[in-house]
Amino acid sequence: MVPELEADGFRVVIHPKQDTLPTFLQGYQPDMVAYKDNKNLAIEITGRTPSNPASKLKERVLRERFADRPDWELRFVYAPPVNSDANIPLVSKQTVSEHLDRLDASVDAMGLTAALLTGWAVFEAAARALLPSSLSRPQPPPASSRDWHPKVM
Image (spheres, rainbow, N blue to C red):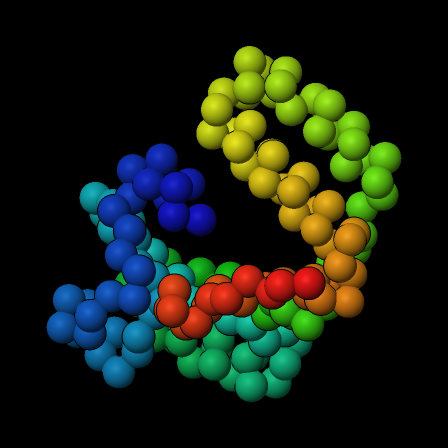
């Protein structure tokens, strides 16, 4: 969202401080605000379904706050929560092999950074195929580098 708003000429502030907001927003903390000449946006990001009664009430109350403010617009963005418990599907050995075979050509086609990311994704897919019980879910980063110890098999 931020790059799109900035491309439209807005100055975007994520989690704005209360003392930087106009007085009519006192007591309300938008997730993001975007400023542009005579059009400003307050953006509320919610993980609740739009049909949820609590969400409907909150939306109605907030919309009333913005009703007499032609220079401000309130936008609700629904972002469902990410389920990190979901298993990652395995990729076939044939798909891994095909991507490895194309990796050299991808350097010329995409550049080093994109090829490195592609190679890393192939490496990760191969690791997940080899160790499905250990790597079937997203791996959280260690709390610190001292906590990271490779498993010896």
